[in-house]
Amino acid sequence: MTINLDYNPATLADLDVITDLEARSYTSDEAATKENICLRIKNSQKAPHPELLFLVARQASTVVGFLCTTLADTDLVTEESMSQHAPSGKTVCLHSVCVSPEHRHQGIATSLLKHWINMHRTARLYRRIALLSRPTLVSFYCAVGFQKIGLSPIVHGPEPWIDCILDI
Image (cartoon, rainbow, N blue to C red; front, side, top):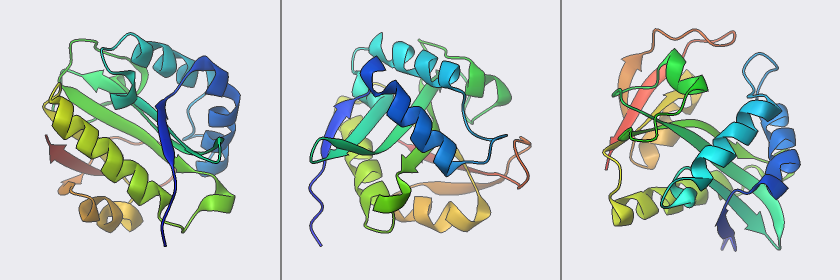
């Protein structure tokens, strides 16, 4: 099946729909707040290539998915990197990969991630992408190029997290 998606950097005009997708994708104690998402959009807009830090996928002009990040000076996602952004950081901490419930299981998340990873490989601005994955999603992330590192010490929500990385 061919997926026709358009990819754009997130803007503040996308804030409400992104916040809604985040809330429908994570438990209330895991989902980023509207304020945090707003801050991540603003931080991405200050970067030379905003799409490398906050990317939106659209299908027929409707937002169907997004991914958002922060930059860090560490090699892995940390508690600090979830709420702070280090503009000179070389590790991209991937915090959310969300697809609207009505568009899931159509390959959108895979397409979004592959497109985004290729953009990173072309731009070569950062050294690594790091993320925390639920155990059930590790194989998904490994299928697009990430490497499983092991159990993360971070406790965020009810389930354990697994550190995964992709060196660019």
